[in-house]
Amino acid sequence: VSIVPGSLATLATIAREATRAHRYALITDDTVRGLLAAKALASFAPDDVTVLSVAPGEEHKTRETWARLTDALLAAGHGRDSAIIALGGGVIGDVAGFVAATYMRGVPVVQVPTTLLAMIDASIGGKTGVDTPMGKNLVGAFHRPAAVVIDPDVLASLPVPLLRAGFAEAIKHGVIADARYFDMVAGHVSRIAAPDGPPPAALHAVILGSVRIKAAVVREDEREGNLRHILNFGHTIGHAVEARSGFRLLHGEAVAIGMVLEARLAERIGVAATGTAAEVHRVVSAAGLPTAVPAGMEADAIIDTMHADKKSRRGELQFALPAEIGRMAGARTQWTVSVAAEEVRAILSR
Ligand SMILES: NC(=O)c1ccc[n+]([C@@H]2O[C@H](COP(=O)([O-])OP(=O)(O)OC[C@H]3O[C@@H](n4cnc5c(N)ncnc54)[C@H](O)[C@@H]3O)[C@@H](O)[C@H]2O)c1
Ligand SMILES: [Zn+2]
Image (cartoon, rainbow, N blue to C red):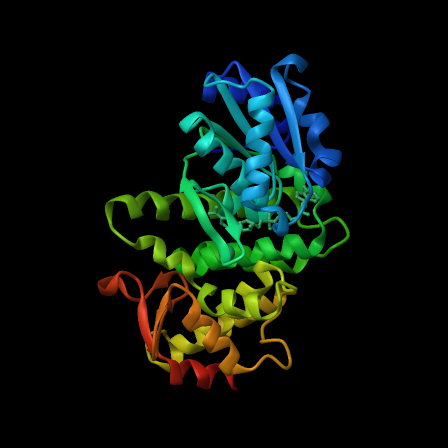
C-alpha cells in the first residue's frame, strides 16, 4: 500500500512492478473517468491499456456488470498476462476486484481508490464482490490486490458528504483500535466542510492511520480467528438503518448513527466505560454526521431488519462493542457480544 500525493501520474511504474503484467484493463466509472482517467493513463503506453467504464452507483455493482466487463476483456483478447486496474470508489474496487478474481481463474488487481472510504476501508483486505436482489455483497471472492495506490490529491474533487462518510470509518478505526488516532481524527473533523477542506497533511495522516489499523486487523485475523469482527462496530444497527432508509442514507452516515447507538448500548449493558458513548457522539456530531435514527423510522422495523441480517439469531443480536475508546469488548467471545433484543429496543426507542 502506497500513500503518495501525485502518485496517480506514475501508476504504470507501480503497476508493472507489482503485477509483471504485459497488458492492463483500467476499470472505472463514468464520473471518475472524466475526472481522473487522463492522469491515471498518462504513464502507460496507449496500446497497453483497455479502458472500461461503467455507470456510477451501487445499483451497478451487479453480476450483469461483472459479466459485461468480463465479456469486454475476452473480446479485447486479454489473457493471463493481463492485470486489472480498479480506479474509483468502493463500488469499482469491489466489482473490478471480482472481475480480476475470476478472469482466467484470477489475474492481479491494482486497487486505485478515489474516495476516502475506498482508501481506508474497501481497498484494504481483499474482499471483492457484487450485490444481488437478495442483498448486498452476497456473491464474491477474496482476492488480495497486488498493490494499493493511494493518491490523496484525488480527494480534491470528492463531494463533502462523501468525505464525511469516509471520516465515519476513520472514527470507527479509532474507537476499535487506537485512542490516540481517535483524538487525531477528532482534531481534524471540524475542517471537513471548510472551503479548502482539511489540510493535505491532516488527510494524509488520517489515511495512513486508518490503513494501518485496517491492515493490522485483517492480517491478525488470519492468525487469530475473528478479530475482523471488531470492524463491524456501528454496522449492526448501521446496516439496518441504511436498508430501512431505502439506501437514501450514505453508508458512512448510517454507520455514524450506528456507532452512536451501539456505544450507548455498550454502556447500557455494562461492557463500556462511562463516557465512551458521549465521546463517540461528540466526534460524530463534530464531523457533521447524523447521530440519531431518522424521524419516523420505527425501532421494531430496525430490529426486524437486524434479525433478517446474517449476523443475528432470534431473540438476541450480535454486536461488536467498545470497552472504551481504542479497545473493543468480547476478546473471549470472538469479539462479538450477544445482546437481548429488548436492550437494543430500549436504545432505539429513546
Ligand atoms: N471490499 C470491502 O472490504 C468494502 C469495505 C467497505 C465498503 N465496500 C463497498 O464500497 C462501496 C461504497 O464505496 P464508495 O463510498 O467509495 O462509493 P462509490 O464507489 O459509489 O463512490 C461514490 C461516488 O463518488 C464518485 N467518486 C469517486 N471518486 C471520486 C472523486 N475522487 N471525486 C469525485 N467523485 C468521485 C463515484 O463516481 C460515485 O458516484 C459499497 O459498495 C460497499 O459495499 C467494500
Ligand atoms: Zn462500513
